[in-house]
Image (cartoon, rainbow, N blue to C red):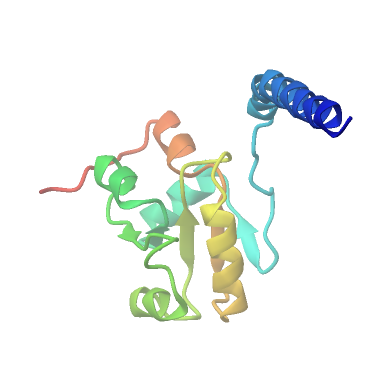
Length: 153
């Protein structure tokens, strides 16, 4: 009797494993249909359109690129300071680039990237009073035909 119960338990485990293995691709496919969108606004920051960003750029406002080093090296807004959100972006590194009362434009890879919204929120919480959250980022900038540059090696 114990042997029979053991076989049923093993059979049940195999059936469960087969069901899980069947569902994994289905669940993965469902997850791929979910597309992240960055928030439209960030408390303490001004959401800035591509046209407004270009106007600020023309006025000499400092731009902060919070993307990873590979993306920054490939293309970035000319003169942008690179403060990788995951590795470099801190209150001290931002303060080394800009005064707390001067405007800064923070951007990343566009609406599918969360780095600029998180960095903008952090900057505002640290007392930076003129944070411009450039939600459309480098994607909108390039699509508008504005200049980009690559890092020189």
